[in-house]
Image (cartoon, rainbow, N blue to C red; front, side, top):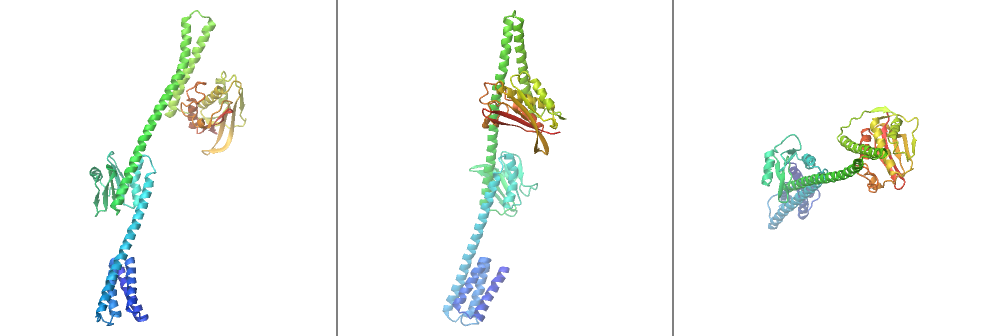
Length: 477
C-alpha cells in the first residue's frame, strides 16, 4: 500500500507544481508524468506504475487538456494524445519493471554463484569421506541459509544431518529420491529432495528444508556434493592402497634385513659346529676359539630377536617405564662399560660439567639409547678416531621444562641431508653403509621411541666426510 500512496502523492505533486506554480504546457507535463511513472516502476513495480499511469492520465486530462477543469475532451486530437500518453506510460512501466526484476534476478544468481563457489571450497577442506559426510549438511545450512539439510548415500545406511531435528527430511524420502533419480519438491513445506548425481549415475539423495533456492542451484549443490564425496572416497581408497603398498614394502625390507642379519650369525655358528664335529681331536685352543665364536654369535642372535621384540612393544605402547630423578653420568659410565671391547680402538672424550642437574629418566632405557648411539659411532668411525660425549643444560624451554642435551660426536663418513630425515625410520639403513656395516636398522628407531616417551627429542647434525653428532634431550628433574 505504501507504493500506491507514494504514486498518488507523486501525481499530486507534479500536478500542483506544473499547474499552479510553473504553468507548464501539456507536452512538458506529459513528459514529467512519464518520468514519474518510470521512477515509481523502478522503485516499486509494475502494479504501482500502472496505477500511477491511470491517475496521471486523469490529472493530465483534467488540468492540461481543454476544456480545462473537466474530464471531457473537445478536440479529437486530444483523445489521441491522452491515449498515447496512457499506452506509453504503461509500456514504459512494464519495461522498467522487467528491467528491475531481471536485475534483481541477476543479483540473486550472482549471489548463488558466490555461495556455490564458497560451498565448493568448503568441500575441499577434507579428504576423509566419513568426516566430510558429517560436515556437508552443516556447510549447506551455513552457505545457503536453509533451515536444515540431510544427505544419504546408496552405499551407506546412515543419514547425515545438519542437526538433531529431522524437520521433514525423512530417511525414506532420501532413499526414494536416490532410487528414482528424480527430484521432489514440497512447496508448502519448503522442502526439496534432489538426487546426488555424477553424470548418469546416482550415488545418493539430498534434502533441504526452509529453502527458496532454485532448481538449478539445488542441482548444482547436488552435483558438487556427489563429486566431493566421490573424491574423498577415491582418496580414502588411494590412501589404503598406498598404505598397503608401503606395508608390503616394509615387510619386504624387514624380511630382507632380518634374513641377512640372522643368516650371518647362523652361518658362523654352523661353520664352527661343523668344524668341531668333523675334527673332534682338535687342540683345546682351537676348540675354545670355535666355542667363543658360537657364544658371540648366539649373543648376536639373541640381541637381534630382542630388538625386534622391543620395537614391536614400543610401537604397541606396551613398554612400562620407571622414571626416577638421577644424574646422567653413572648411566653414561654403565653404557661405556658394556661397550668396553668395542671401544678399544676409539678414545672416548667425556665432557660433562660437575654441576649438571639430574634428569628424570628410566636409567636402563637411557643406557640402552646410549649403547645404540655409541655402538653406531664406533662402527662407522675409522680405527683410532675419537668419540666425544658431552652433556649440557639448555635454556630452551620445551613443555615448560628445562632440558639437558646429551650429544655423541663421531668422525665417521657423515650423513647427507636427504638421509638425515630417514635414518630414524624403522629398518632404514644408509645407502652407502648397508654392505660395509651389519645392522637391522632398528637401533635408531628404538632410541627415538624411548627418548620421545621421556618427553625429549632425538636428532642429529652431520656433514659429509666430517662425521655426525647425534643428540637427545631429556627433562630436568
